[in-house]
Image 1 (cartoon, rainbow, N blue to C red):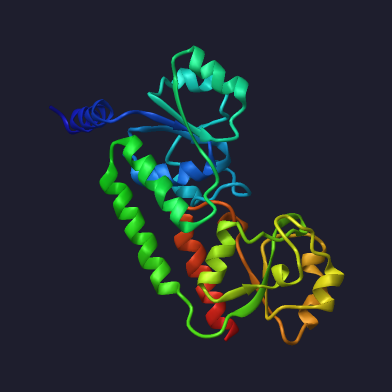
Image 2: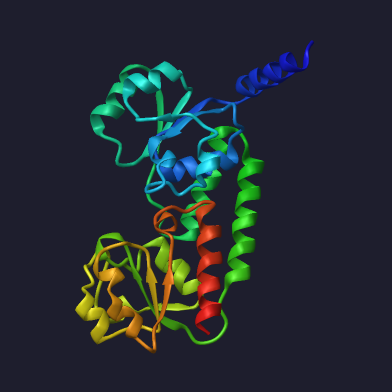
Length: 260
């Protein structure tokens, strides 16, 4: 058998031994890229090929085909399983059911514990529990390394649209873990509340994490806040768990060190 024939034979064997999957959600895309073998993951969501929406490294995301998520596109790929958000449109889910396509849905992980549970579920779904265990171990190592010592610094995470996260958001838990106390929560603000420039200038935090490009977030007056450290925070780190946790806590720990 030629070398090319060996490669094709091995890929065919991988597909035969494990279910093929299409992922329609950027957060499950990132996890499945780690816990599935490449031949299994027939396509990921088109969001993961978009720098403004992906939580993955784009070079890694573009190893995989992308799909817009229509029933017709997915059927053409002929997967064993479709993995989607729990917000999948009921009509789309019913269409898959009518066609005999297995669908598994996953919600938004609001804690690191929830995210690790999702990793276990997706790895089991892919038939590769060892890969899930390995990813969870990497996350635990990153969390341990980024754990803060000493008193927390007050911080605002100013997200796209000028909003702030609530206490139940995963990124809020990661901020607390790395030594930041939510300044927006102390001001009585919750999930997706809008934070104005005036509020920021009147009552600034120790650290301002800028994760958006709204006009107010680029205002020169922010640079005049002598007691506030300004730091860029990639919006790709805001919403997903899985391997994104590793990058998020590493960046937050770096900002904490710089602020100190």
